[in-house]
Length: 277
Image (cartoon, rainbow, N blue to C red):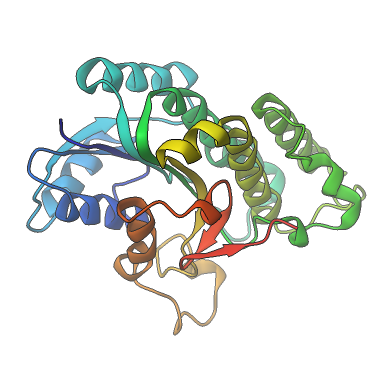
């Protein structure tokens, strides 16, 4: 039985590099689903994969739609019996000189609720020994937030619904203009990444015993600074930024390499755990 992989947001940048790396690193009997919101773009991306070994299939997948994510998970389960590798990578872009109040709604819907949609739909069909990895960043730990906000992300007691509620409350505060008074950082990428990692930690807490027994990994991953069209407007000096292909390498090692218990439920950057607290 072949290994089944899914990559969201895979038509460009890091997502494409992950899909291409899987297509090259897996076997001929394996399948890689390259997904994104635009049919033309994902078809073009699939055509750019050089020397694939595994079969590459494209699917239109909008992670902001509950029913669409659930339907795709059902399709994967019915066709293949489950999934082995999932990279939840889809992300909405931030554009300079646009007020946060205009950006935060679709940003949360894609990056945060999109993450929990993927976790809810794909974790039940993750096969033993599989990998469910959420692409986040080094911002995604409590040290990025003031201590007064840490209690909003108590991952030892929260559910995924609670994480969603926390992110929606923050979104509403940004829209209302009260986020700064509540202590939230001005840069909206920070609370969003904390929410993504919190969601991973909550799911991992619920699954840890059985996953560690069969070598199944649920984790968040930080690729580091990547030179993409999304990141360039925000950084004056990209000299030390990685290409998407270079950034994908450590993430692919985590997906394709042996199970490392110390990484379970954690944020992992270049193979090392970034402490939550």
